[in-house]
Length: 193
Length: 291
Image (cartoon, each protein chain N blue to C red):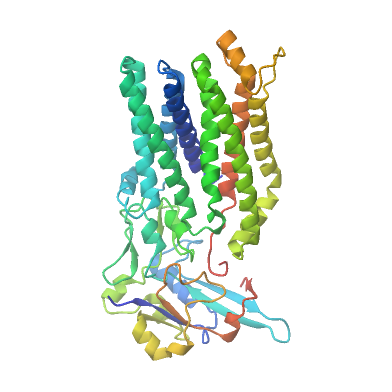
């Protein structure tokens, strides 16, 4: 099975949050619910203060804890290897929220169920990109086969572990990041923007 | 109090399992014991707990879907075990109320319910320890949940068992003592582990816990005072009968349970409920920037 996932070029990201807004728009999300979130972090001190952004969504893990814990099978691995959510099966127990180490699933109060990034499966099935990928003004995001993305962007410079993220060994996330050097600094502080 | 439904669910089920365990024990010590009130209360608590769990769901009408993934999901296993425990306990109550002559069947059902119930407590704990919430990554939670089960079960059994439960009085009191001692030891280890964790989410949980140190103090004071009252009941007259012997003597003499046991039950159950509130209140989820 192909291992599909997102590639994120942190070194080019300017933190404009267009991907986040496009995702909200596509999924018609209400205030407070985000399937893709951009966060901003600071490291170092003057005169060596640095800043970086991280655009995160579902990592469509190879060993997804949300799928393992889901009592209903609503959270499942689709035929293309991505992690998908069946809203009709979901009972809104929120166990996936406790299980995902990346804090991805969101409880949608009005519907009484959770929701999350489906990597715009409908668009992909129609031969298009996920909406966040096409919305990115800096072309920082891509979606596709991780082996191909890895070969394209230089295997040696790509990471799956960052100090801001939980260890990738837990769920084997399907995503690749070209990090900024400062993002490897374990002493960071989240900056509200 | 966003997890009120889960507090009611876990406390009721654990208390019900605890009662059934001591009814089971008492039935082996006294073959003629019926323990009608205790079994009825246990079944009532189990039913209330199961119904409360539905209130936690965003879509309670689809609750049956949760039975679908026993093989992989601890939550699915929890629902199976809780459902089975409640079902067997309710059947036992029906027999106790309408066909008390079927003693062997009642004995078998109570034993089965106790075994399923103790398994349910393990599964219930695993639901939390297997999650990605750093504050719940501790084997000490198994001790916390089993201690809550046995202490609440023991005091409720003593309060509801009356003269019938006399033979199980001493084992029940001693169980509370051992369970509370283990709970204290393992929870001290848990607090140290939480403090030593490199996870920022665990650190935030510890900060939350520190900010609620008054609530935690009430938890431990209630539990320790309740346990103390069981071992050293306040007496109207002084009899030199040793540990827990005074209360037993009073029950034998009057056929009623002393006020000390009711008060101990109130304190121990209050302590465990406050502890469960803290258990959910310190949840800090891992998210980006908070590994």
